Amino acid sequence: MMEEASTSASGGAAGNGGQRAFPPARSGVFYRFTQQNLPAWKPAMTPGCVITIFLMIGVTFVPVGLVCLHASNHVAEIAHRYDIDCVPNAYKRNKQAYIKDSSISKNCTQQVKVNYHMRAPIYVYYELENFYQNHRRYVKSRSDKQLHYGQKYTHSSCGPIERNNGLPIVPCGLIAWSLFNDTYGFTRGSMEIKVNRKNISWKSDREHKFGKDVYPFNFQNGSLIGGGKLDPDLPLSEQEDLIVWMRTSALPQFRKLYGVIEEDLQADEIITMHIANNYNTYSFGGKKSLILTTSTWLGGKNDFLGYAYLVTGSLSLFLTILFALIHVKNPRPQGDAGYLSWNRPNSNS
Image (cartoon, rainbow, N blue to C red; front, top):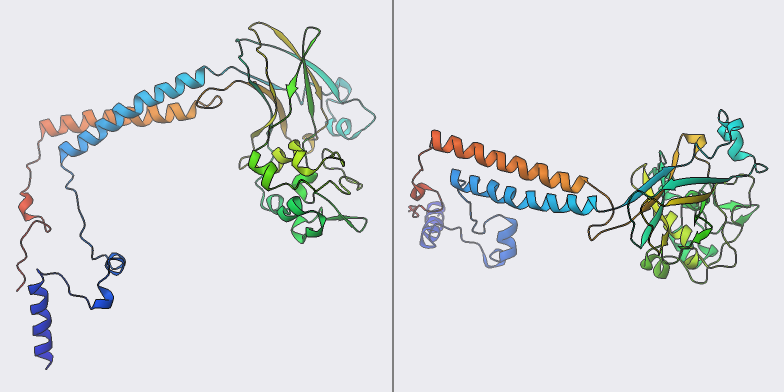
């Protein structure tokens, strides 16, 4: 009986052209896919095929890299670090005493020269360095439900900034508590340059993540103040500085949008920046900078993408030439494709 069963099984396989025969329950495409029994195409990578692939990559990537670099170089940008220059000379050696003393004025005036013509819109960013918003405890210290529905959803995940004097804090958590609170103004001669502070946050955040009926409550009322305060008469959906700050950064050096200048700045103009240097970065060795930048169809100034395309394309062209020379000098004889396993006629019996 065992011999007859094996003979019939092998005969059935031979009758089906050498393919395995499955029971009806196991003959579906999904089952054959999971068991890796579907027909597959295996390309034979001949020297000509490899050379052609590298040539196409090189011919495509090099022009794309040049276009990206050209777009990045057309971005006009002013970057000015102010955290050191805004400290009075008497406190240069004790910056923490300066930033923690509320009786000392934090107002600071700096001047920068516009080297290139900057077309509107001009984006105003603040940049922080050595600030780790991606720290696990910091990122988890928030309550998304509370931001959307109010103080009834205060959770233990907001610790250690959860309650003060027995009352819940809205918004709770370390992220909101450490809200950036430096402010900026700009003048050109005696004329003020207006900065539009509206619509600097994501529309989806304003409409779906921050409640229109949720107002700040018991915020920054403790003995230890972390950062900026919020207007208790404005709902969280309209507190755009908070919305921008709550979208944490993955890297310790990051920029966040402060506003937009909607008028052109001419080359060689002198712009006066009026800064309120309130935020304490001195206690952890951080840096603060003010950025004015334009944008192109590719975004802001970023040379990395262009150089990445150029390096990849140039390396592909180099390998194309190298492989072509090797193939011409020492050609490799082609094998008979008829001996490939998927081209051989089934000889099972």
